[in-house]
Length: 123
Picture 1 (cartoon, rainbow, N blue to C red):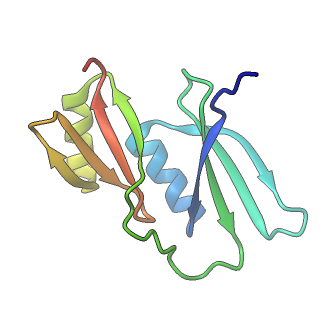
Picture 2 (picture 1 turned 120 degrees about the vertical axis):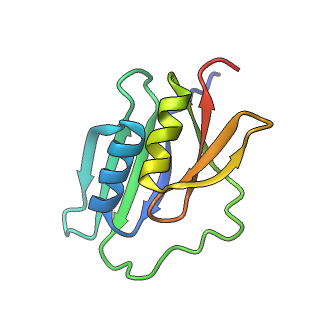
C-alpha cells in the first residue's frame, strides 16, 4: 500500500482576497474549482505549475466571522528559487510576520492569519 500527498486545505473568509494574495505572494494559480450546487461553498485548488501538490482554499457562504486558528502552530512551507527577491516582494506587500535570519527563513501571513514559511531553494 502506498500513499502520496494530494493537497492541503485552508478555509478562507474572503475568497477573492485570498486568491489575489496567493497569486501575488507565491505565484499560485487556480488549477480547479468546485462549487456547491446550492452555492453554499466554493473549493479552489491552487497549483504552482511545477509540482502536483495543490492548496485547496475553501470558502463557506454562511461563514461571517474570522476563523479561530488557535496557536497557529501548523504551517505550509514554500521554496523560493530567488530568496532575496521573494523577501523583497513580501516586504513590499507588508505580509512578513516573522523572520529568523539565523535559520535563513521567514514567514508570511495570508489574509486569514495562516503562516507560510519561505525557504531558500537550497538548504
